[in-house]
Image 1 (cartoon, helix red, strand yellow):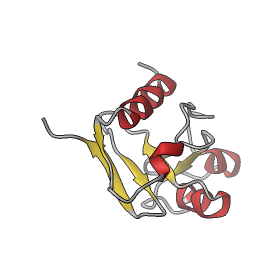
Image 2 (tube, rainbow, N blue to C red; image 1 turned 45 degrees about the vertical axis):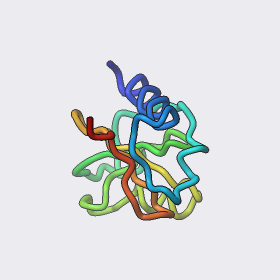
Image 3 (tube, rainbow, N blue to C red; image 1 turned 90 degrees about the vertical axis):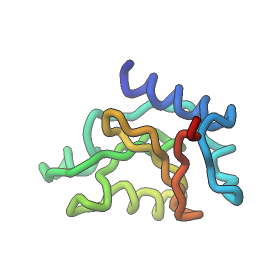
Image 4 (tube, rainbow, N blue to C red; image 1 turned 90 degrees about the horizontal axis):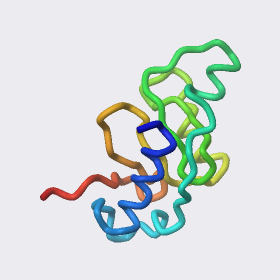
Length: 110
């Protein structure tokens, strides 16, 4: 499954209630089935910097580096653009993060 298909599937699953979300988080209802714009951090690719992990914005598809990366572009984008929810782009990870509610959206335990 490619990155766009993974994002589409995750958004579908959270809207269907298959992913556990914070009870007070209204932001997941606003998620779009939009795929990542690039295969790496958009800003780091422009500047030649390196990243640790990648996050995709579920409002616009922006790909930014995580908070363990020197530039923390994903969280900067969320703050500046007002886009609250990102999803990990790391293989095998199925979580999302809401910056506004500061909480994870994760698969439900079966």
